[in-house]
Amino acid sequence: MKRKLTADATMPATVKKIRAAVYTRKSSEEGLDMEFNSLDAQREACEAYIASQRSEGWVLVADRYDDGGVSGGTLERPALKRLLADIERGLIDVVVVYKIDRLSRALMDFAKLVEVFDANNVTFVSVTQSFNTTTSMGRLTLNILLSFAQFEREVIGERIRDKVAASRARGIWMGGFVPLGYDARDRRLIVNEAEAALVRRIFEGFAQTESGTKLVQTLRAEGATTKRGRPFTKSDVYRVLSNRTYLGEAMHKGKSHPGEHAAIVPQALWNAAHALLTISPRTRANRTRCQTPALLRGLIFDSDGRAMSPTHTRGRRGQRYRYYVSQSVLKGSAADGPAIARISAGEIEGIVIAQLRGLLRQPEMLVGTWRAARGMAPEVTEQEVRLAMERIEPLWDELFPAERTRIVRLLVERVDVRAEGAAVRLRLDGLGGLVRDLTAQGVAA
Image (tube, rainbow, N blue to C red; front, side, top):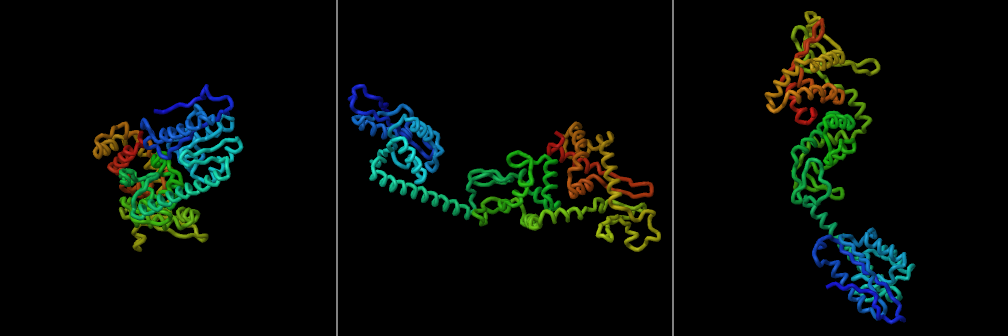
């Protein structure tokens, strides 16, 4: 049974009252919810000691100073701060603890506490290590005991660090923030398939665009988010690209070990992305600007039905001019070739994109697209298809060149170049597939 000590009315008037405060601490929260826990055991021993000093005028102060689940390696403890505040207000004459390391495990921290005690004429007493800080012998004993307490703390820290290093060397997941693409279960990393697809998408997108800025723009346009649910930044992208966890490896202090978890990114894709990371962003940006993809490769034909192939020439100052040239010219039969055997790539691509965006706005396209999309995903509604098609056009300006090329190949079946203009034939099944993907990603929402 706990005892509450108060001032004894029968105490002789000549005995000076000494106000004693009990401080208790426990590092972990385990067992704190029990009816009688470690803090209670410490307090009971300290109260018994104070009771034994009643003849000397010792009385227990009413306030409790208990820190549960707080390390002794820091002074940032709520109850300890209250104790120090009451000491500076002159409300306490002696601090009683069960053991010295309950107050602090660090020699420097304890020296700071002793300075506060001395400045306010407060004595420090350890119940199980009978001494106080008012004598030189007590101070010597205090320093010796505190040195051993700090030594024990450092040994425990080294043991924990060695255990972590050994576990990481075996590829065991030791906790921490779970990277995108995985879930933590039973102290293991389990592949999250939806997130893993996004991780591979980031690696592939970077390998295609060679630009973190363009990749971020695309990811944001698609509504992709990080593990914490916020839009991607360049830092997030580069953090994903540099995380060797995706190769199935466990890292510890710069060293890589085979992990217990499955890899998400193939080695070849990792190598392709990291080969680009060795190139400065400015060099990559300049190179990307010079590498405009042939948007209509394999899709464009002359008026005679023969394919037109992409080619380019260089100007006197190194400018790059792109063209589509009829196969009749390339094979040396230009004499009987079509009226338009050579056309500017930028011009024809602009015409096709303008026609494509115009066709997407036509009401009659909605019905055909809905039928095509419904054939692939019966649950897709007409409203969802309409909203998705409305989003395709503004989304176009946010896409990087490689993604635009993919969409054009998905939507365009054929482009015929004639003297009067270009005729674009669409693939409704491709348009339906694109709308289905956008709907699944929530773009239409």
